[in-house]
Length: 149
Image (spheres, rainbow, N blue to C red):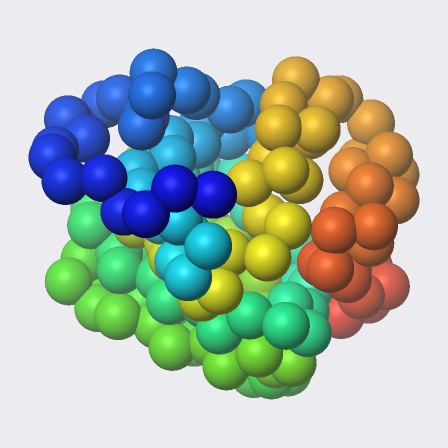
């Protein structure tokens, strides 16, 4: 993996021209290094990522537009535009756009581990069970569906 490349990843674009569609949500990689991986998500009303754990990464979410409901270590919290969510490794978390407006957020994890490779494999998959199976091979462990209640 190369060192961090100087420059700007423009709004609405991904680093190196890359974009992922993961179960209907649009993801743009913004910066890719071994030590950190940043990506933007665009979540329409009703879209979500179920509760999961990153056992080897710390994760951060900077909400840029809208509101996200998060299940954070078993408790529901809301993050609004401008809020930073801190997710230490090993803590169960999921995010949900329960509003009637789109939400946009910048995520980053440290270290990158296998997350970019995971997103490459999840691009355009439509079967949630396959997403869960592949994610487990890349150090992202989804909890049973009742964890999202």
